[in-house]
Image 1: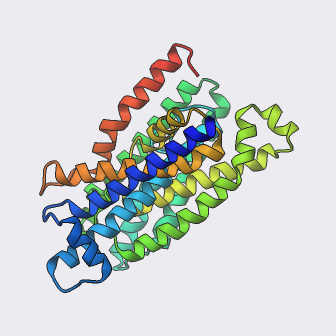
Image 2: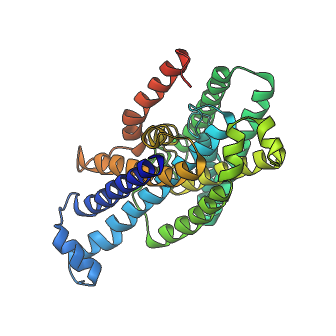
Amino acid sequence: MARRRVAVCYAVLAAVLGSLLAAGVCVGSTPTGIGRVLRILWGDAGDEAYTIVWQIRLPRVLAAAVLGGALAVSGFLLQTFFANPIAGPFVLGISSGAKLTVALVMIAFLRRGVVMTSAAKVFAAFVGALVAMGFILLLSRRVRSMSLLIVGGVMIGYICSAVTDFAVTFADDANIVNLHHWSQGSFSGMSWGNVREMAVLTGVLFALAFLLSKPMGAYQLGESYARSMGVDIRRFRVELILLSSLLSACVTAFAGPISFVGIAVPHIVKSMLGTAKPIAVLPACFLGGGAFCLLCDILARTLFAPTELSISSVTAVFGAPVVIALMASRKKGVR
């Protein structure tokens, strides 16, 4: 019965993801019918619709699916590490730390007339994510209350965001001023090169995370049990930190900080599956995160077209209520 439920959930998530991919390619300021889209994908080129679909919309929706999945998996890894469903890369300030370092390095590059490569963005974001994670880990040694740790993470996020805003606001170069749009979170401007890079990096990281499914399952039952099963706790924690930070850094480097996906999606997925076993939750998180970000991206660019909302504004509308529900349930003693 449990396997059947998991299979049904996978099928539903895959169907929703596929439907949203199709919708994301078709809708926009210039609507394109599904028939025309299929002909374009088959190779029918030569008009404006081909350029819009092939060069703008398709890379964007694929990026939203890949990065949304990466963010959800990162959130699940952090929730496993801290044993708290409210932990996530945005709430703990990890995304904001990554945003700060990317913005500072990008400003330094642009002032010298150098274009920052995707690899440099990911590396800078990874450094910022690790620094923010380091502060959280130091705080966790002095603060035993998980609620206070979450508050500390939020404060770190605010500090990093404030410094980023100062740097972007007082920049002189027009190109640097345009970083404000990126700093709010957006999937716009994606290229096929970006999609290939993020797909390879995310694919490798997801595979490594999936290989940790059994140690994660043991760790969920307590450190003592995990040790009795032969898990090297110190090494396992380092691996979780590196994987979650790299996944979050990849998202921030390409799309900026995106809020609440890393908290809301794992919780929704675990409720659907009826289990928290990593071997079942990780693939579902990736599918659910991709679908969640695709839906929010479609709404962000169509609700008030031609004005486009930041993706974080839309994800917050759907994700924040989930976080509130989690906090309320934990207050009642529900785990």
